Length: 192
Image (cartoon, rainbow, N blue to C red; front, side, top):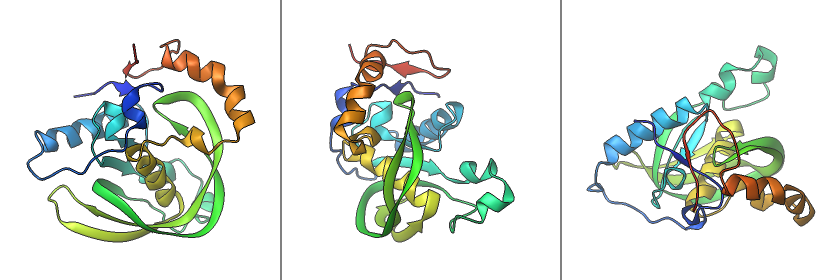
């Protein structure tokens, strides 16, 4: 089932999310719905707060980014061809490498894209859908998507990385999004 994506301005997007246990109600269905929602809205990642759940869960599919690239461009990224993975109860254990810029957007903040600097590598501990524990290191585009989605479960948004002047320039657009004055081709829910 395609879930509505929560728009900028909703309090759930600013909450630090909590861990869950294997008996979390309808978790398998929620994850399936998140995949369907992400793909139907042309996203490469989706975090639980974006579908109005304040839990430490996000899904990513970085292979979609590589599918659209020219062969030469793919060679610039060490993580090609990407991964598809659900992350539950994720916690970053290490950040490494230089910060590099990439033009990011967010399904909760439609039609705004900005260059955001993030570390090259992230090591993250998490459990998978079977609650098996993992600690893995990711690089490149995959690391960037993980860091973007991880921010969501920490109550942070990509626009928080912008300089105050740039944020002021975007204020009108952000206010419009929070009031539902935006047209997108996917289901959204707006704060009242």
